[in-house]
Length: 401
Image (cartoon, rainbow, N blue to C red; front, side, top):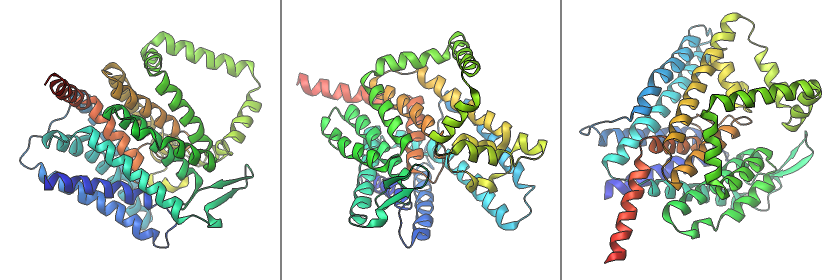
């Protein structure tokens, strides 16, 4: 019991310090180091607990390992051509963080939960309170401080960000809070966890983050129509439907004035298209086009995870990463067995859409990313479904007694 509670506490610290590291503390570098140190400590803690246990991987995860290996290998190849020692070390750290995140989310954490009989509900509850305390701390520390508002020169909006470094961070974690509220309410069958949603919606509105606003609206709509949404998502496994979508997009491009459309999209995304075009134009050789400019360029783009992958690991790396997403999505959509797993599929899809304007999809530096990937692996390994059956059986036994 003590070991289990210590694990809960460590996981809470990993998430809470992760969120806090993106606030405007004068010792932000200390928090930055702390979040990685706590992550490593938690990883070692779980690994040592599994020394005498059998490590198992579901078939769906085993299929992904070779593709992850290819993606990581491409990033390692890029480091060979880095001339600066500091850039070389930085690139190695980035690649190492990707590998550690894979071990943490795909191997160690799910096996630890399985061996120690930890329920998914307890993990969601920890994440729920971690983001709750982080958002409340941001609000209290930023209360009455003019620096809690950020004037956006592109849209001329005075955006609220609390004590976070940027309004988009507040929007992202408010969206995470809404996701966790719906998910925990569904798993626990307790509506009390929905009470924070109006506050999180207020944060989304105050942050003026268009991405979080649109994705939150889609989340609420998808939760209300989850059965229809899952059926619609299954259509993407149909080649005829994909052909129809591709043809419709091509027809739309031919009908509308393409330059005007691109200009409207560029303006609607705070001129991100211009930024991405300039970054991609730096690939001045065939090698960089295929294998990327290297992970030393990680800080070059913060507005699209897929563009970031394309810049860092080229077309080859982007294809490998998209293959991982597609295989995961196909496996999840095929094995949806209950409402909880439907919610996870919806959150995964919306998080992938969120990453079109934020570099948060697969990164050790973002607690939301860690939680989503852990949930995906648990969903693929059917641990959530099996735990739900046990809960239903217990409730049924209590009712009959």
